[in-house]
Image (cartoon, rainbow, N blue to C red; front, side):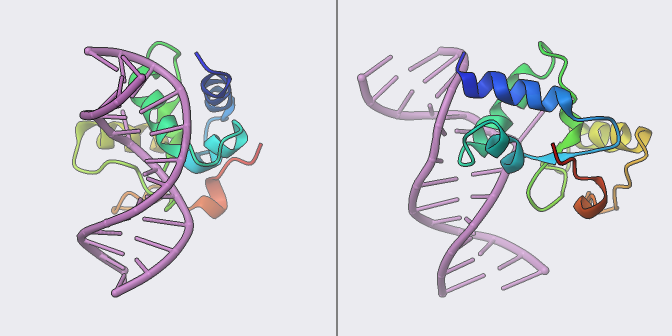
Length: 101
DNA sequence: GTCTTGACTAGCG
DNA sequence: ACGCTAGCCAAGA
């Protein structure tokens, strides 16, 4: 496991409830701004094993990454539970909810 | 070693 | 605003 990956996991675990971060932002904090896709992969494959709050990670547009899926609904509900407002189009207001480490 | 795979992104038409 | 393209990088096969 690369240092970058460990960093990503640590950062994601540090996101407080009610806040979100973008893939690119996480990648940048972990030391590689270009590896946003890798962040996505980590979430996709390691979220359960590392108990990551994957629902607090959204794309650079402030939108939920994948639409039309059970996972989409799951993420929306999880965010609503943390009082994060998600619009009908799956958009989160980054100006309000983005977490800045 | 080399492909392939992504919950990505910035840029361009 | 929107779809498409080309970069991007680590893990798994």
